[in-house]
Length: 251
Image 1 (cartoon, one colour):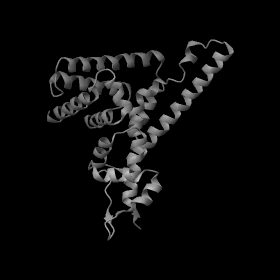
Image 2 (cartoon, helix red, strand yellow):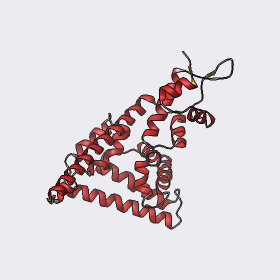
Image 3 (cartoon, rainbow, N blue to C red):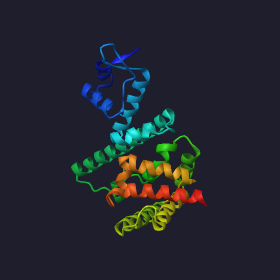
Image 4 (cartoon, rainbow, N blue to C red):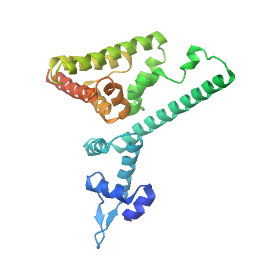
């Protein structure tokens, strides 16, 4: 049964103007029109809008969502699993931080001093494995990441973070030096990035690395890790990862 634009706006709690805009930019075009020319949406259209709204809730930009949905390899089930993992992780982290705020307020009101470990308890170093959870939460890659990181000490996490920062700094310096993503120096740094993931978290093939590169740009949370170091660094890394994968496949 077809749904009119007004009905869909009410169901999805978005404005009719928003749906018109999605139609204009090709993000969500109605599958049909009434005899009078009014937009009519099918069940498939409603499912697509749900995907759009999930991505919007996670902070994705409209052009990023359009690119993801247009990918021939797009899999709705896998995408829903990834979105669920991201939302659960976000909720868990928010609860931990709210709890930390409450304990900090309590200490402040009572004139107590929190010990150093409690002061930062809500800031979980496991955030570095989020990329595995985001896209491979039900696969061996994520299970392997969990197995490895469950054994890490604070010193291990510090070494891992220091290595990651060093690679990001080298990538930023390469950009500052005018190096292009297809240059051997950039590709070598992309390979260094891949090997870092493989050493600390999970086996990371070139194809998997390319997928991660897409997420580094599409997900604002991951993009910020790189772009706060140097504007445009997430896109530079993605391009270098793609070039490195192409180089590996050519060998």
